[in-house]
Image (cartoon, rainbow, N blue to C red):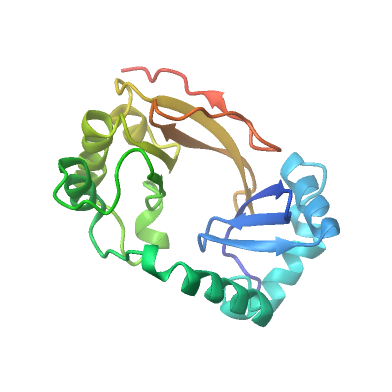
Length: 221
């Protein structure tokens, strides 16, 4: 049976190498230059995902299981890096709105606004129920928006979402930075789709590599 799960990805390049962000599993894969260039061709629409050898190989090897990503040496290095920073790592199991309530109210001082950066990546709003065992309700999405736009403006954070009208409306009047960018979906509904990126006024953002930020249009009410 053919693999019908969508492959949702975004390629990017740093000084350290070539990577692809797998949105479905919220993980990053290291690529060779040839793999990177092929996936970029898929993103640009030059190459169909149906004939991409890279996508085909990931599916065959198990795009969604750990075997496709298991690299013993890389994992050892990452675990060693974590161990060296163990005294600086705090793990929470808070629901997001409760976490922000603690941070912004000062009742949980794990850091301060001068030396803290938060990357906030909630479950998809539209497909969250279908993709994740734990997904956020409308109330949680709304309270997170309230916390960030009312109490988090002086903190440094970036928030990403799928381009859902409900989310656009939540942040429509917030005094924050609002952008759109393209991300490639492959398989059933393949193509380049829009995602949202919101950021606090305390950050300076710019496009990088093939991530092109465009100002989000004001939603019609």
